[in-house]
Image 1 (cartoon, rainbow, N blue to C red):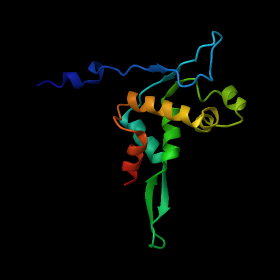
Image 2 (image 1 turned 135 degrees about the vertical axis):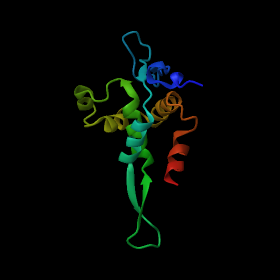
Image 3 (image 1 turned 45 degrees about the vertical axis):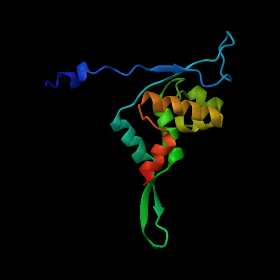
Image 4 (image 1 turned 90 degrees about the vertical axis):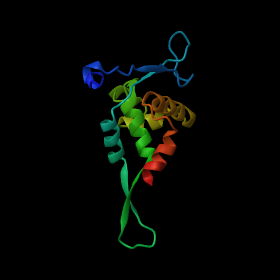
Length: 141
């Protein structure tokens, strides 16, 4: 067997996906505007998880801590990393919601159900194959 199929230049690239996550964001034609999302690499995901890790005191063991992934922080970082359009780093967009940073913008822009819908689409494109909350809980343990 040859390794040629695994060479970077021969790997089928993951296409970006467009999805309408809300009827609150509409274009001039009155139709819902689609958000564009992309897949990230396993290395990029690892960095997001590392950036979302917090120290938590161990119950009953004074002075001892364990590392846990903050699920909410990770989800916001994942959404920000995978969203191509709208540009969540756009200064004008952030100013309109009176926030700074892509993660804060997501929390200000979206209703809870919209955020969940976007996260579900992001889990599909990244081939997680399971609910992101289950994945986050698995990482915690």
